[in-house]
Length: 320
Figure 1 (tube, one colour):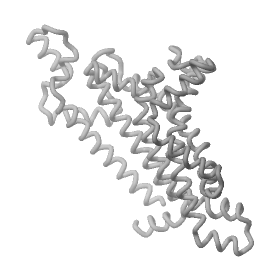
Figure 2 (cartoon, rainbow, N blue to C red; figure 1 turned 60 degrees about the vertical axis):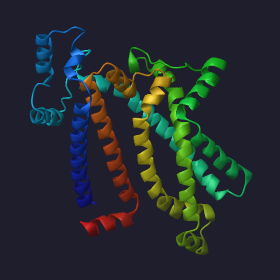
Figure 3 (tube, rainbow, N blue to C red; figure 1 turned 60 degrees about the horizontal axis):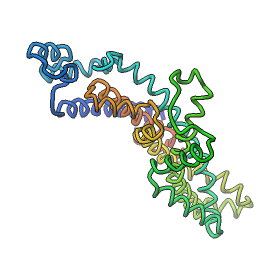
């Protein structure tokens, strides 16, 4: 297990370096010079040259790349062209919105999907088992922004129980207002992600129900709930953990939609604003941090699979 962890850590570092290379190349392929974001209309040649020297775009690409990688290694994401603030500090402020939003939606999805997916598999011949499967299909078919609009219409406009969006300027220091503002966005993510995850939980449970070890446990005298929960769930959790990692990563990448619907100042909103303002350091910083989060989630999901299933640990040890 230690050898596999070290190998996966090395792969993580290499993947992050390759992602940084791709990010550097793609941003340099964009039309225009980053220095233009510092200048207004009608800038003189001297002003343009001074701005290019300030942002470093007058240097050869090789020099820019070495500087870029060196700054990333020191966790220096630069300074915003527009606000003149540290990109890392700005991302930290925005993450205080995006991370709670993603994890609250993620936890809600698990709470909904796991028990309902098991019921849909075990009681698929009953009307409520079939109804759960049909509702999950509908949840997958409806776009996430439409679910958000429906929830706002119901709970914010009609019932007036919750705010329709926004986040307090003082952030989490005003905890009750901030938590209340997170309910509808997290519920939107949880419902959409839960509908997708429910299908995988149901499929994994069906595989367990048809397995030989479950029938053997029943033949040895174990009751059906005991055999399912003691022997089946651990084996069925292995593929589900992988899907959980993908769903959580997708939540971070798709947060821009939810944040726009509910006017939340998270990473997605920061990225959209930076693109509109051609604020290259902010664009670069958000994309890099998002890539890092996705890679870390995949890394954690791989380790979790091997902790759950001893057969995978044995395989990784044999490969090492």
